[in-house]
Length: 447
Image (cartoon, rainbow, N blue to C red; front, side, top):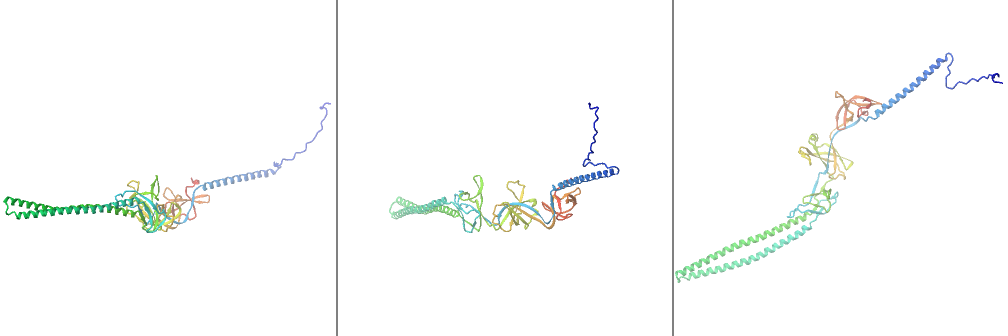
């Protein structure tokens, strides 16, 4: 049979359960409650969103505040200082110089055979250096031989002069005999002719003239002999003085300390670079190659500009630092200010500085001469003041000074009254308390 003609049975479908989470609109008055619930959920969600947004804004503001450099106002002393630079030196020092030779060879170079190590303690009278003087000693021996030769020449010349004088005296005696003979012959010539008598007279006069001439020759010979001896004596004296000068130079080659102290070698230019003088180096006469200093009395030698000289006074306190020892700080005091400004080395003539010396109070075995250092001279000092960095103080258009004070996550602009200041900090007379935090720059949140 066909399906069309055969009737199908009727089946009923079971009812589906409601889906979980999907509100089923209640019938009648339940619709209002459902709408109220939706409104409450929307308000809660909006409150949560607003709270999260506010918190993010506060965190952002806090981040802006955190990048601002700040400092706290502190209670303490405020010093106004001015820094100088210079080198250490001893207040009591003696220069040890290479001896200046007094002999003719005074320009020769000197070689150091021995010298005490730099930094060693020496006593007065101790041998601290020895100069090579062997060549000079040999020269002294040669000059001494010349002195002995001059003595021999004087003795020889005296003997020759004695023989020469004796010969002259013998000639005088012969001339005197001839004169006596001529006088006798003239006395016996009365019986002779007038011509013979005249000849005898002329012979007597000639003998008389010869005798007088020989007497004068004796006086002249004495003068000549005395002059010759004087020349030889001068030559000997010259050699003696030459020898004695070199003998003094030889004694100077042994150098002794004239005071107790610390031996410090001086610099020398050797092999293209600066180094300290040591054994074997050559020095020139008069060159300073060592100093003897008293390390217990050290000072800083510095210079100040003429424009700043009016703020310095003798007796001002200072803090001294040594560049070679960063952790070392010593106290000092100005004890000398030069009255005349001087030009510096390799500077224009119109640039003038005034030398100033700062005495180091106390002593330290590490502090030796020729060390670079700094000096902070205390120009003024205030006790128990509230101070802040200069960078925190700003001025408005009217010239009033103000600071930005941190209040939680915000900044407060506050007018303050400032007092004296130094190069880094200023005193606050009013408007700020110790412990409050101020900004060192304009906060970005206010820009």
